[in-house]
Image 1 (cartoon, rainbow, N blue to C red):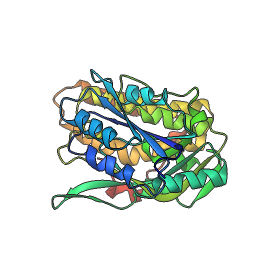
Image 2 (cartoon, rainbow, N blue to C red):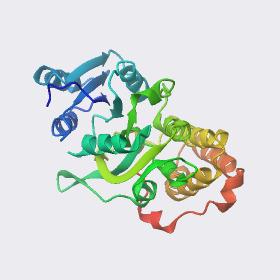
Image 3 (tube, helix red, strand yellow):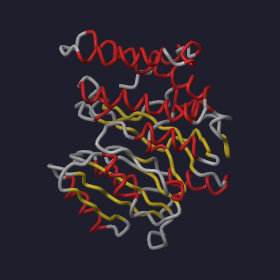
Image 4 (cartoon, rainbow, N blue to C red):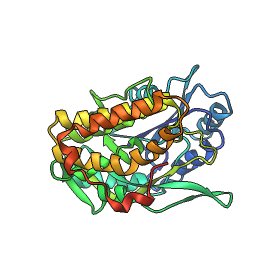
Length: 315
């Protein structure tokens, strides 16, 4: 019941997402597991996001609003939420995405069964079709990471899991975050953190259940849709390299090979297209430097792109 002690804290950051935040809030209120609290973090919004968050908190005591006067970014917003978590489990939901109704039930039941440090689940992209955002299918790289269901595994046993690098696909035991925080002042802050989760966990679970509809905004305003801008590209390439570096330091060569193969199939082709017509020569130069570094890695020679991914470019 909503009045019971919360089991899960959901950290929900958002900046200028007034058009989408009501759906994210409603997806929390529709959860079949009601023992949650949510920290709604307004990261310096200039639109009505803050008012939407305030209205949610006024109507439902499970919501609490935190506010940044100036935008600090997703990493800082999530870290602010993490400092206030006092429940057994913690998860993340960006305020322009939506949870599926049984997400919390599925996550918590899985961790109760396994005793693992976190569980990573599947997700789908939600695109605007005929005026309505509609969820698509589970993409091949997501399926490889999460299907079939595996409980109590390590990255050595399931290196394909390293492809699931988004913060909001996972529910963790809060203790896992005692010495773990998101990088701040950069975009794509969850990639390095995800690889640290995989390498530091005693054990983790993967499940094929879809828990999140990840919105691909029709207006192209999300960070992941802005890779044509040089500063965004630099953050993106640094995140990719940083994630690989975490895996290298932990000596997970097969996970590195899996990641390089995915980067070659999913990330590099569209970036090359952008670089070929970019007006700033620093853009293709940055991409070339990254590709050179990638090719120097021992795992690169055996990291062959999967042809199934040709129609699944993450844009």
